[in-house]
Each structure stands twice: as C-alpha cells, then as structure tokens.
Length: 277
Image (cartoon, rainbow, N blue to C red; front, side, top):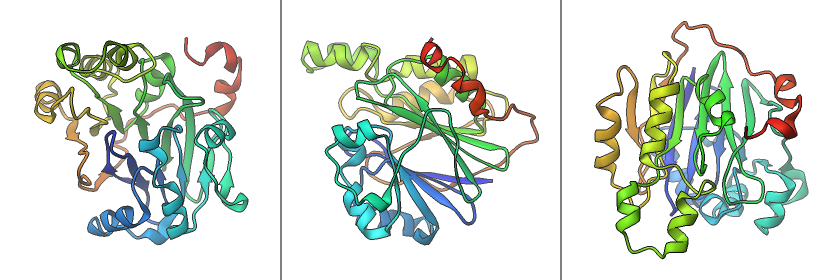
C-alpha cells in the first residue's frame, strides 16, 4: 500500500507526498520546510519517515523551498546535475544524489523511477513511485502525452496528472500571445482536454484515484475540471489538488490485477532513440 497526498499544487508551489508505513519521499519542494511540516502534521504524517526529495525540474515553483526543506529535515536531494546547475541550487555534497532515467532508485521499501518528459526546462522528469506492486505516478508540467507518459500512466493505481488550463479560457484570456503559445506549444502544460483524453484512452482498470494537479489560477477553474472528469470517472475517485492547501491522505492498494513490473533494462535499450516517440 502507498499513502499519497498533494501538499500543494500550482504555480505558487508544488509538493507531493508518497510513502508506505515506514518510508516516504516528497516530489518537488515548492513549499518552505515550515509549511511542509505544518501540512504533513495536519495529515498526521511523520516527518521522520522522509527519506528524500526528488526534483522534477528547476522552475521556481518546484524548488523555491528546497534549501529550507533540506535544512529542516536533513534529507537527501535526488536531482540531475543539469537541474542542479540551472536551478542555481547550493546543496551540501553529502546530501546530493543523482538519478538516471528509467533506473529505479530503491529507498527502503520504495522504488522510484524517473521518466523523461516534454517541458521547457533543461532536464525535466516525471516519477513513478512503487511499493508492493502498487504504482503511483506524478505526471505534471508536461506539454505532451508522449509514449513515456502513456506507458507509465497505464500501469498506475493512482496518479497526479496535470490538468493545467481550459483551452477557451487561455485563448480568450489576457496573457500575451507568446506566453499562450509557450503554455500550449508542446513543451508547456497539458490542457483539460489533453488530460481527459489520456484518462479516457489509457486509464487502467485498477486505477482507484486520479489527483488532477497544477491547475492554472487564471486559465482554469476547479469546477470545470471536476465536472469534466467526474462525469466519466467510473470507479476512479477524482480529486482536485488545491493551490492553497493540502488534499486528504489517500491509501492506494493493489486491487488484485496483474501488471507488468517496471524493468530498467527495457527502457535503457535504445534510450536516446525512444524517449519521446
């Protein structure tokens, strides 16, 4: 079983909790250490179980609380060298850990796999966290539902999936044309329509929870997303991850379906040719 929660999700800061009874990780550090601690305590989560924080990319809403977080918890930071450089982050060497695409990082009972994605950052990754045949995906800040995303989404019992903008609201909104094109241009963010299409076409029968994440403050509304997904969710519980507070804590279990395990050897073969086909 894995317990999951969004501690915050949006351009004002992103941080996601995934853990079992003894070990837990955070994905991104867009909240201060103090705020992260407060939100975890409200969920009755033990900070002593944190074994590390994994960084998806260098944009400020994913790293601005990292130094504070590391200082508070003394936990290692799993980050690529390019993201560390472009983020201009200064972390003590003994707390720095690297990761490679598709190669599992094993921490206690958890296995964390990094998955390259399309986004306008130097070296961006999604993650899949697994424990006891339960898979949870963190798929935000991705501009395209590429084969990597589809392959891993199909194996998840729960997922944090970006549903960033309503296409009509973005088109009619006040953003400059260049910014609109950045958001919808294939290396920005997933729209509600793209996220819904991914869900409808590739949702596995064992997916119990979908946490729709990173909603735009100006180009989306939680009610739009809830109505869009709620009408076709079936047995999957739809949760809207807030940009102002933590979600509830959800417990994700294996429902007895057989799924293929993640195998790094498969993904590493011809990796440069197949990352985003």
